[in-house]
Length: 557
Image (cartoon, rainbow, N blue to C red; front, top):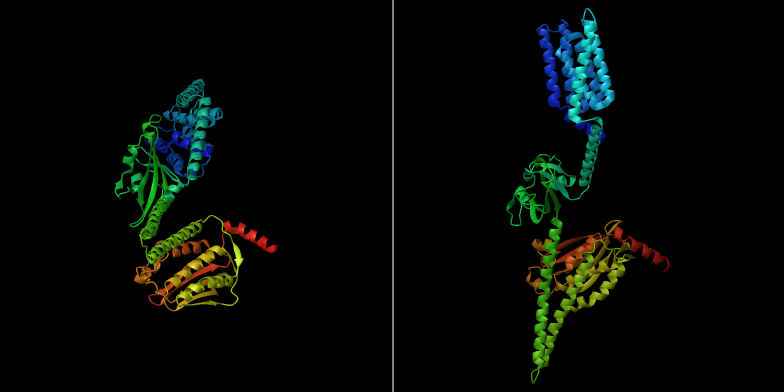
């Protein structure tokens, strides 16, 4: 964290746009002095080599982590060495180039405080002595006074600039500490935002994105950077009526916090993501104008919206389905009461009315049972009672229960079970409900012929059970609708048969809960085959407690 902070401070103290141009100007000035014969040396190669080294050294500032010069002490030392060579061997004494040492003193003082200042100042004094000794024919008292004067001026100027820029060293250390702490808090806040499941996007006052988290990229299904992108180019939104929404216009009207749950984001021609968007304005009274902006919290509520719509539709459909039998039974009972109140009541008519009302009450009872079964089937995260049982035992029980109904319609009712079919471990209750729905539908919609229950092994881990009938059949165009709730076929014969339209919908839910899947083969006027493929061990992690309990119980039986 500290390295990141220092690197940002370096960029502020020594910006590239200042370092490189200054160095290039100094190198050009050195060559110009040579051309005007104002340099001490007349060796052109040496002047060019030094100038080129100077420029190259500044260009390294552009490379990532300064390439070889990752340590600022090495980088700063290299500048000291090059400038020392220039002052001793190229420029004459008393040249204005000597004052280029002031920035080096300034940087040494900033980065290394007293130690850096004394090292740079000591090297300056040595360079002044050496250049005077090397260039002057006589090294006398005047030369020493000149050296002292130049040294004092340069060091004093550097110290004053440093003091004016950063204050004293204690204030500078405090500033550095605060900067590092601010960077730490900033990074910690970014880490916290990135752990959020909801998308977070922050923008400036003009709507350009300044910060975002990983969830925002996931919501937008992109891995491109969003920084400095206009948010309205990234988020194309519409309202409940499909009209485009200008997000920044909405944000500009926000005083403190606004929430909208009626906004969608199209992701294709036929698909939208429903969003819950909270817009908050960064308090303008606390920050500079360029630091103002907005924060957008976006949550995908497509699934919740879908569930709400499905719930409303289900309530509407159930209400409609319940209203009809209640109305009919109420009318029949009223008719029975009316007939019974006559001086000479017609007993036959009264019985017929009561019978019709009873049929509607039975129908209501079946619907309530179906709704109860549906409620159980939709409890995905609730454990079910799991036992191990033989499939043949359940089939025999179902045969005894439904054979009278089949025989009453003149239908045959048979089984076809392959030998050595394994026992299965699952919910016996759910399994029976699935098979009962298959069987009752087969008997209900079959006029002649009959029904066959077939059981076979698919492989060592799965079994398949089928109920085959010779009934009305289902049109190919309707076969993908049979598992929808309250769906009834358009076939006149099917329509003439009573039913809640929930049986196969519940069957599909129960099959999913047991880890199985359903198959359907049907042809109009030739019959249908409804099948379920079930795993032999048809339970989930949430059901393991029930499995363990039954295994322990079996030890003592």
